[in-house]
Amino acid sequence: MLLPSGFWNKEIAYTELELFFWDILEEWSQVEYDLAQPYSGKERAFWHLLHQMHFWDVEKLMHDQELIEELQGCASYLEGHGTCPQDCVGIRP
Image (cartoon, rainbow, N blue to C red; front, side, top):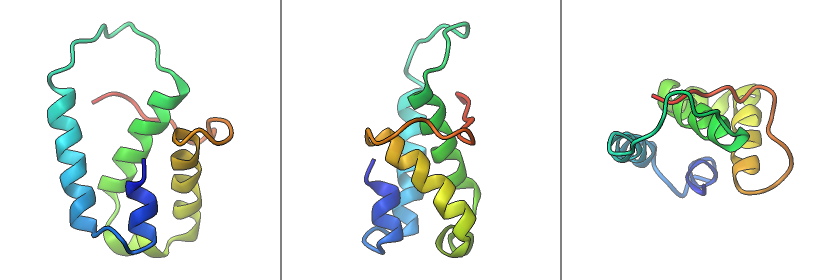
């Protein structure tokens, strides 16, 4: 998931994150899944990161160091580094 890193490195505009968010939700609406299916750590981290990147405005995402560290931890985990951060508690839409 290079989008968050690209955003923080100023390689991807915030509008691209928004388009990515809506594209993911459109794709997700076509997925059939069982509501009782348990979440994996990666799924929780993915939905948490996606929600937070959409919820907060561009200024907070660029300058709130605590938020940035939290989201970078989720992105790093999704890229295969480390363990799932405790604060990644995303749920399916």
